Image 1 (cartoon, helix red, strand yellow):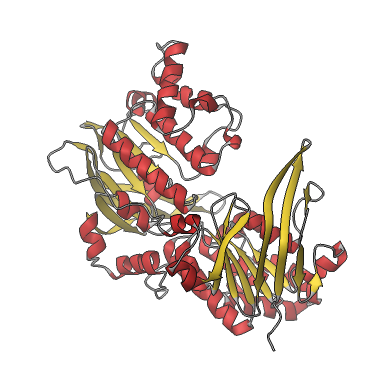
Image 2: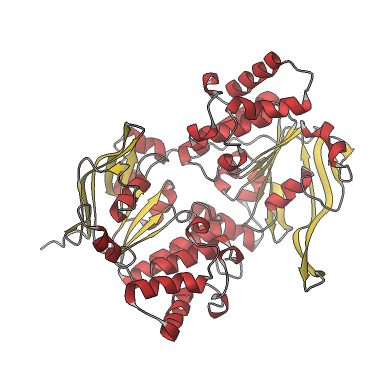
Amino acid sequence: MSVPPLLSVKDLSVAFTQAGRTTLAVDRISFDVNPRETVALVGESGSGKSVTAMSVMKLLPYPAASHPSGTIHFKGKELLAAPERAMRKIRGNDITIIFQEPMTSLNPLHTIERQIREILELHIGLRGDAAKDRIVELLTQVGIPDPAGRLKSYPHQLSGGQRQRVMIAMALANEPELLIADEPTTALDVTVQAQILQLLKDLQARLGMAMLFITHDLGIVRKIADRVCVMNQGKIVEQGPVEQVFKKPEHPYTCALLTAEPAPDPAPLQPTEPVMVKTDNLKVWFPIKRGILRSTIGHIKAVDGISIEVRKGETLGIVGESGSGKTTLGLAILRLISSEGPIVFMGNEVQDLTFKEMLPYRHAMQVVFQDPYGSLSPRMSVADIIEEGLKVHYPDLSSQERQAKVVSALQDVGLDTDTRFRYPHEFSGGQRQRIAVARAIVLRPKFIVLDEPTSALDMLIQCQICDLLRNLQKRLGLTYLFISHDLKVVAALASRLIVMRNGKIMEEGPAKELFANPKSEYTRALFAAAFDLETASADIVQQ
């Protein structure tokens, strides 16, 4: 006699109505999750993965959201027709969810203890010392160091990996039967990602729970899932056991996903070209102040004696965990934060120049940030965003000349020029990143700092952005400083590589050689986590 599925979704549709217009986000999908099983929902942004998960929890913005068709059964009970009171008993008890970004899910005003205690009190009535003991036990289970000492910590006092561990502790507080994990590792370093995945597998085995795992990373699917459902434009186009789908994909979209890795075609080393950027023993130390008089008692050594050299036409890749000093180094080179030590740009020392004295160099050095939505003004049209730099650096240009350059920049990044009067929120994540690149290249820079420009993007979009950056580099003769924790992307683009840890260079050299033969234990741990999702011991990598 076969065991009935724990979760059964049949013919589910989800529609959203806004301003009298109805959009179908999920279109008649069906899948099951069996007890103790891990089912992965895979697809690019906008495919309907998260909407499906929210439907199971009934957390969609009803009545704007509706279900034209379908049923969701959990342990034989129909959820879509269940009243809100019944759903409250199920949420947090029987079914729990972990979101992508823990900082937006955790209350910044409450301690870790208070947030977990609230769940225990609400669902199982646990209070006082018993609740405190349970919280310490949960934090121990998810690998938080010194759990008793962390009870009074606030979310901002924890690292990204630790915050995600706290989210897992909250989700597992009442030992649910089904855990929904919505992109729980996307914003994390590769080493922390591997640790979180291993943690989830261990906890699943210990608690006997099922998992619905939502991701766009097929490497994670292969590592953690038993079965996979591939979603595209609101439909499940293919589903089955992981190995079967991976070895013999039937749908063209699945085939495209499986082959979506940035092609390794890095910029060649340019030993004869002039040096574009050079630093010598560069330091960025942030003072630690204590007491009423705010006296300095020490320093956070974000960048601690870094010497680099980037030649024209090369891409210098900088990798390392969060907190290793990658972004700080990039900002210091751009003179956006103060630093100590020589910085030479195009043969000119710039480290002591004032803001005004730096202006003549600004058009030649640009930056593309990790989050295009955060770096693009929501109140400005795309044309205004791209044109803004031209008004500052080329004030003599006429309005028509500026518009012509805006149009040319949008063509360079492969965007429809007719969309330039729209606003950032009207574009997808990949399109917004292209706008950010267009804003940088419209000034015809010589050197661009790319700070995690692909980390928040789907695999297919990542490949497109990598191809775009490579083509622009060849055509415009650009020099890149590429900061990332995604080593697959770095391997596709970098001529030379620097591995950073705690503000220092652990290892450096030609990227091809370093990937083939890493010398330090830390670098080997990074590569194993990135390419094989293998964990390393806590003394090798940070949590």
